[in-house]
Length: 398
Image (cartoon, rainbow, N blue to C red; front, side, top):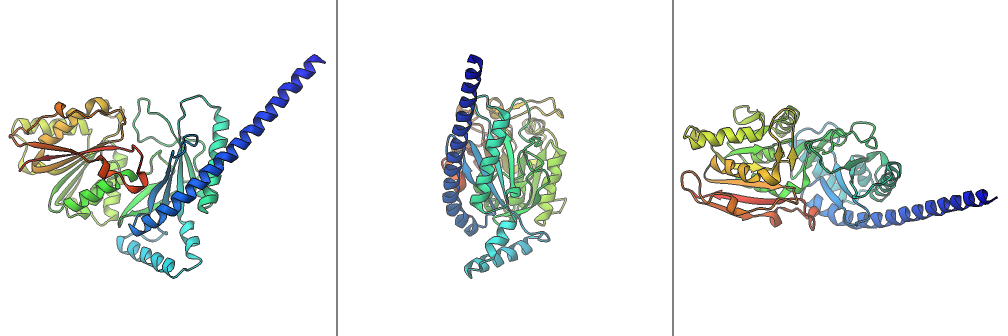
């Protein structure tokens, strides 16, 4: 009889615990939904006004709901040029202005969301975690009025000795591929929402991409760790005389080339794709500059240095740890800048400590190097209040 009492006691505790968990999840769903409603209303108008079709509407705003949620409005099938995209967006604007009741439904048919769960600092039952993420995804779909199948679920884990550009092996991600074309400030980009952890476009660098476009006219631009070439596209659109995209990954170089061609930039003479370890690329060029063997045409007017926080690719013997390696990378970039040239250095590492004393005051030729922290101005509206990245601008005196 005593054993029966004990079993009944533990059974009752389990039921109470389950009820408590269910109540907690419902409470969190309500919190999440309310925040999404507010942020969506605020950012949707801003995004449409600024010709932005992909943006972040939630980024761990509430500590007990450690997720981020990114919106992607894909262009309908068949729209594959900038002219077609502009016409489509003008049509959407006209329909919204005319209060067409079916236009929102049409937009939502091509709207997707990527929901990232960030790794928690404590052990949690995997099944329970998956169920919780599913509940948050359902809340997002209902709030945003998009099909639940349009919510792609992923998990961001702390990097442990691998590159940030990982394949997405999460069992909870979409069971079918979701790929398409989106537009950002009139530039077109292929995105893959399901195959990799990241989709092909980092939203937080949107303002810096605009700066590159505004300043690239008739300049030679080097995009290091180019990933899918978003900076390269903006530089080409800004009228750069040459754009060189460097990355060790052949997959991402091909992605970058496709994005360039999508925007009408296919001239092989002006647009160069170099498959090489960026550390080795810089080391070779910097040594040539020091020895006086670097040709004048091999110096750059603008360099974008936006490396991953950590990488130990099997395709190179170099291990990159940006927290330790940033001074040498920046020095090498400065050595291959033309007089009057500009280096933009960015990192999403929260641990990097910038120390100007670790960098030279002048170039090899004696030109003064000026530096400026541009982090505040480089954070877009949808990332306000977050520590998404740090950024610096270095300029060589003429």
